Length: 384
Image 1: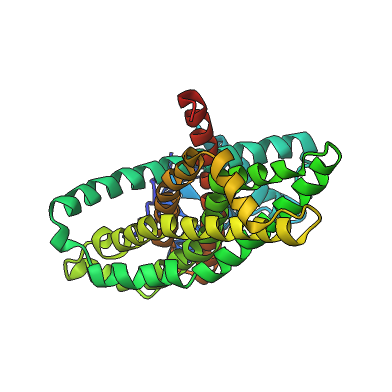
Image 2: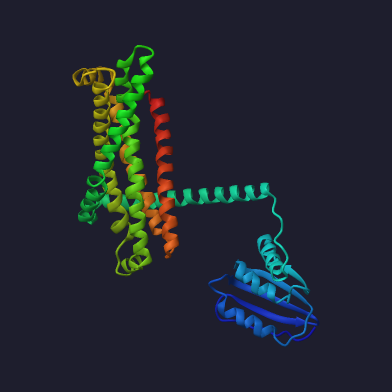
């Protein structure tokens, strides 16, 4: 065996190179990805230059991360081209790294990528989506736990709450969102009354349209419309605001001067949503009922406002109102938590900010609908 010639770089990634006869042995360690290989790329080329060998053996046990760029540099050591390629072996139990290195070598030789069967690709996508869903759920629950700890401390010491920020956010989340929420709830109530009146007309029971509007608006539609609009409007705004602060390294600066991120950014937004959601839901209920009443009065049913409200009072129990009001703060809290968590998860690029903002809205709406289904089962068990 010839004397080994070793070369090490001081930063990751690094490598060791030795020759044994006509075989080159490359032991790689560290992070071999696009962001870290600029320096080691030239070192690998210099180390291999001037040596004659016809086989390469890779030891990738110490590689913590390998992407296409890193695999390309390693594959280049095998001196594969369009016509020939030296024999080479890979010593690593990581099947993903072996496959990536083989794909990089094939690309250098101009070979077409392997034909992936559609069912395999579908299974891979489903697996990746499942893994992402589980990870996002775990991270959200961990964030929720951390948030609950901070809120417990703030309840004991309320003077630490940023009340000026809370009031400003209540104006932004609640007051500014009220007109569009009330308008949409008005139309929802009107459509419910119109559809109910036409459906019940064939049974001669148009008057029961009042129960349909009251039950639907008070129990479900008002709180759901409020939550969905908060998710689309305030939740995305939270993610964009906090994500932009992270891109400008303002959050790092806050940590340096001793400001707690949860107390300064997350808690005020959560409190604002916690307060605003029930208030907005109440206004949405009033608007929805008013829309239904207006259609009942001016539409084909000829139900006057006095008769509408008298029947609403007699036929629709107040429990439906309280069911909607009880759900509202939970919806507001989960929307704020998801928006803030996604904002803090922004990695620093504009692309990441856009992806996190989109994920924030999707996750918030998904969480609201899931939570609403859980409340429905709970109230069913409680016979409410």
